[in-house]
Image 1 (cartoon, rainbow, N blue to C red):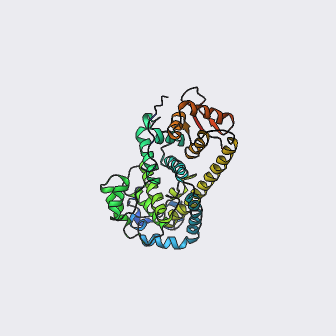
Image 2 (image 1 turned 90 degrees about the horizontal axis):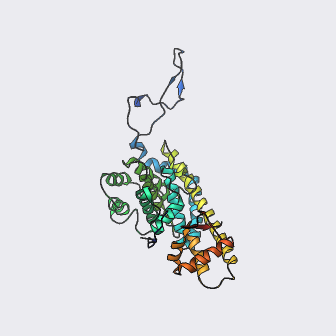
Image 3 (image 1 turned 120 degrees about the horizontal axis):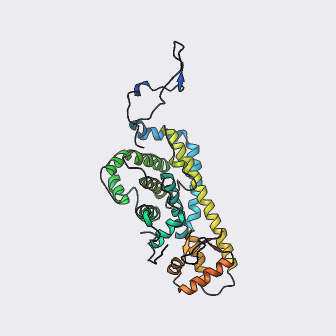
Length: 348
């Protein structure tokens, strides 16, 4: 593994159900119904949701009303997270964004660990055959914490094209589908947007990351102050796995958003606790480098010596000496087991 030091990147820089020959035979009853002649039970098709039913804003508004308790729980968890992040600074938001995108990738079937994503995002190293995928993941991180809005001043088409970085038929279809959703609660509108993206013709794989990022950022920009996005995949993909009817999809989204926000809160508490312990363990150290290294490890899940040198601004020798000292004191741990190209993480 050959690591070259490069400048750190800037922080803020289903398909719809098709009609079939059996659509007119849909039934709300059980799977297997005995016929009148007493013959063997014949399987009948499950009720299916058509595109028009699924993307009727009135249906989502009605479902939102029946699920008001679930919506309130999701908003409460997100409000707690937002208050925590209001004073946490850019570093913690970045850490959460890295984990959120890594978990989005697992949901989409593109398993890039947060370790690799962190190093690639910071120094553009360790890409290998996954360079394009890592680039897509890095796009997701930048969009979650950077400038720009999913719903801007120029209408859905302009906003989507600017935020996504491309236009075309998919964006036009998505914008048309979103028309009339203004009365929905931001979390409901985010759920609508995520499922609309999946139905708009986007291929599978990394493009699912775009749908998750769009939904997370839309809710965050309307509700948040400290939190720039609503976590959806963090810790689980419940919010993004809803299927079937509108109420079923929306209930899963609310539940998943609540779970992800609580997972984010747990991450923050663990890092706050680690930072306090780390500073206590290093209080007898002179110079600014140990304290600044603590900040780097609070921000990044994985840190290499070149990465630490870049962010701290100290010499390689000073950085390496402090990394070794912090390892001995149990503040951080080295995870590669190598003599060269080593990587450390906070010892949580």
